[in-house]
Image 1: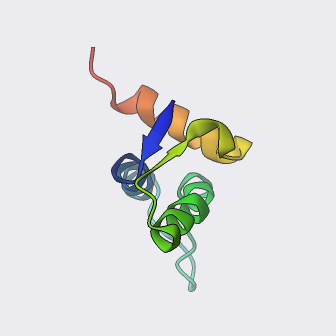
Image 2: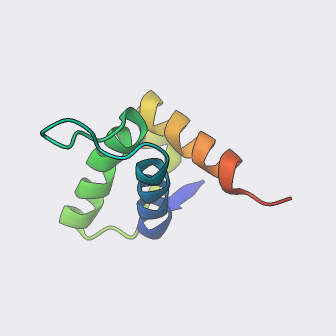
Amino acid sequence: MFLSIQDLEAAINYWRSQSPAFGEELRLCPEASSLAKPYALMIVQGSQRIPLDILDEAAKIAIQNYLKNTQTT
């Protein structure tokens, strides 16, 4: 299964809306932070999608929970 850059951006925005940045440095919540690195790498590499299995455990959990919380039945 692959994750598009648009899906990754949507997941980051979802987590930012659930838990806005905090502190003087405007630190991202753990979920958005775990997704920021693969998102940045995709931008730098010009990738449009990545396989889910290359994400670290925290990013996988963030994506899974994002999908679970946003899917309509």
